[in-house]
Amino acid sequence: MSPKAEEVKTTVSMSNTEIADTYLDAIRSRDPSKALLASEVTLQFPLTPRKVMGRDGVIAYMLALLPGIDGVKFERHMTDGDHVATLWGIETVWGDIPICSVFRISDGLIREVRSFWDPRPVLAQTRGE
View 1 (cartoon, helix red, strand yellow):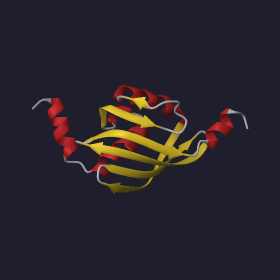
View 2 (tube, one colour):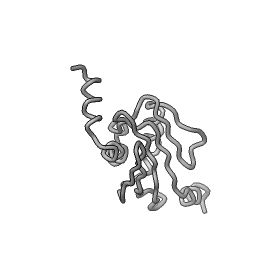
View 3 (cartoon, one colour):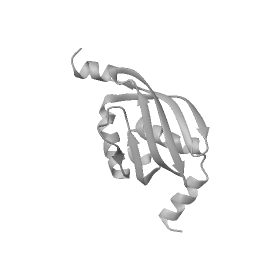
């Protein structure tokens, strides 16, 4: 069995919440390649000037954010079909920031990540307030 086929077989047996967890684990471990991201994944954050497209683009974006993240706190998942809404938070150089991320998952991979959080702590410190 090829490595690609083996990866698909492994991810298909995982629940959608376990697949969503790979995104948080990737941030926690500081290794975005651990997230089960589809090649065509998209990502949106409040301060992202545009939708981030593709696995390589999402990994690069995650790597750019990691220096400001000190820890990850998981709260809970809520699921509906192909969607997982995850309440979680990060401990950052700007303070604790609660986040709600909505993942769209199909065929064992994360296809879309839309995260919602209050950017005011980050903006206040970057403006020197």
